[in-house]
Image 1 (tube, rainbow, N blue to C red):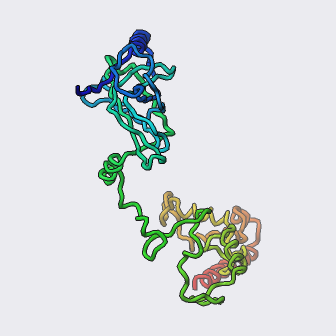
Image 2: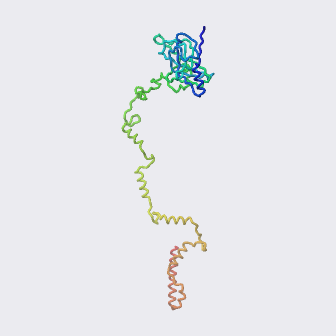
Length: 343
């Protein structure tokens, strides 16, 4: 009779899931176990609380929720290469409390180890169907990282879509000409891989020589210290400029080589900007300056009293004639002085 292989949720598993749904909690599945069925196949049942003859147990390594049916969960566990020497005919999944939540009848598989002359990697997969998978948590052991040959083939086929391989160097180009240099333990390129100079540089001050290290260090430190702007004047230049300003400064005075007093200059400037009277001989005009000067000077010279004529009657005729003569002479002197002043 042909054997049929299937999986079941155990009665204790159903109870825990139902209770989790009612209380809003989750059932945490953690481990997968396998057994040899005590030497042969047998009909598994929901009432089982353990495998008939368990030979190995380990943490889950992969969990996938069904794409077509979200209430289906695929759980996997990897049996290490150094574990074996037994047949596998039954499998089960346990929760964090160690209770058997699901059990499966598994196709007979022998798990060898080295002493049998062969090694074999085995990944056990179980597909579980729950009425409400949202209340089931499958915990994967992060310390177990396993990839089957098909996983690696799938990864290699999709690697170009997952990352930009053009941004990475090929391993065969490491430490080769035209390739890239590896780093030492200090994160630096080893000196043995540095490109050798075709000609060593001698010390000197030419374009094809190297400058002395001690002097270069002094120059570098100086370049990092505070400096005046590049267009700043030196102290000698400023002293020359100040001396030139001082020598070119004018002293106060009223000659062509001196400066006029600033306060009076300001008054003169303000007056020059104000309104002025035009020349004329009316009450609203100004009289000619030359004639006004003559009149002013004349007003300052000696004159006969205003009552000179009334006093003439007290003088003799000879005295009056003499007075008239003197007066004419004074007038003539004034006119002569005026003529000289106008010439």
